[in-house]
Length: 340
Image (tube, rainbow, N blue to C red; front, side, top):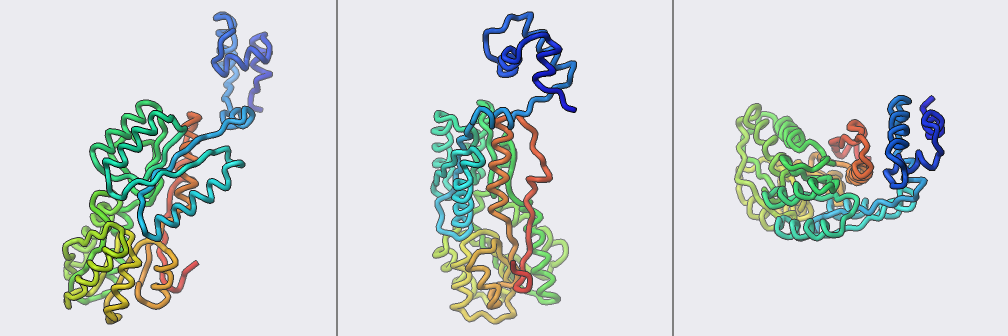
């Protein structure tokens, strides 16, 4: 059996109240008595259940999610998952709020982080814009003992505690292999629609995609990347212009803005010899899969990412270990035939 506080009290010859004061580092215990209690803890191998202690004390965890203000379906879905987490707050002892910042704006993100450093929440989950100023702000907060989790898009090289998202290089490689296999022996050009190269998830997807095409499908040439800023209207205009190129045989949408992509494809009445791979299963991409406008969707579970971020932030606030296998985010591949 695991040793208890009663065992510690008996071994040290002190009261339960004294053991509680030592465990919680409160004053009022003589040095010699504190040493007796600490020796008993070591000899018995006592490991404190911090989560249970916090439950007994009724501790609440104030958490902040920082998201880009963006009119795209994936971010709407991520917001919806956070709202579900808010509904679970009484049971999970969390106090969650969301702050939106302009998309792909490092200065705005740094400003919010600096403001939060004065408010001192228990943890921050953020969709990161990969910029030196953002990295410096995150590192500063971590050194000040703020738990930080990056969500969806990582901030590699920073001191952030955890990343809740898919392996984006693997996602890009998977997209390239699907596209290459679907196209078979055909030769031609591939249009790539991104949000912005300022975010690491888009850069990593492009890196993985480019490497597999170069290694295994050299007859497929990637055109200059279209940066639609995850805005459906901008994406619609860029894709419409690109589809004027008769040499395009495939499209890879590695970010959001898929509503604009789908509208452009439908307006051009694109020949179904064009193969299209996109990210994130939303009502719009689901419909496009079903009517053959899109051939395959790579999806990350936004609900899992939000729940993972909350678990990790609470664990870090309590100084507990993270169960890595539980927090691994899976990449799903959906065709029209296996939609959930």
